[in-house]
Amino acid sequence: MKAQMLAKIIINVAILLMISLSATVRSQGQVPQLLIRATHCLAVKDMFPSLKAAKLSFGYLVDEKSYPGEKVLYIVNYVSPFRSNGLVFAIFLMQKDGNQIFNIQNNASFVFSSADNDGILFVNSPLGGIWTQDHLASSIKQIEKQPRIDIRAKDILAASPHTDCESYTDH
Image 1 (cartoon, rainbow, N blue to C red):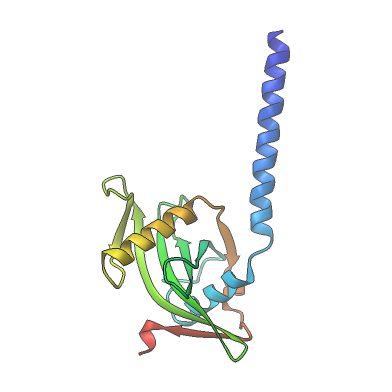
Image 2 (tube, rainbow, N blue to C red):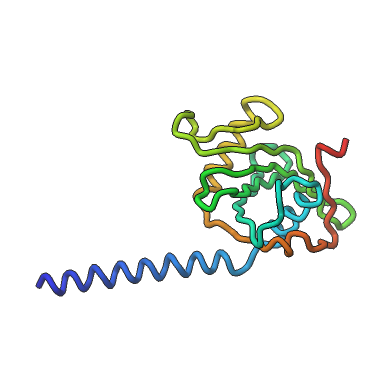
């Protein structure tokens, strides 16, 4: 009886592991073009500390509620393989003359911290005030719940047609 119960538990654990691994593989398989094009703009605007790694690790979230009438793409670039710290970017998405415009409006470095009430400590504060920090922190938390997406550096650097890149640093 115990052997049968143990066998069922082992089979259930194996099934859960297979489902988990297949979800991770699926999430790594097809990188969304929106994310590739946005990371290309971040690279063009020199927002990454380094592109020397073969792959960079990301998470993202599209927000259409925080800014009425606007669509914002939040991207997290995980610096640590343990997802303990990274960079967060807020990019406004627009269309003009058939081109998609990626307008980078904010960025900040962060670490996960149990000392901070929100669990996120900004190493360098983002532009704006508490409202902006709260929205970035909330976005990081939502992104953290999703699978990580690895993108090859050479794919980030590849030219992206019909994409215009703008940044608050342009002005």
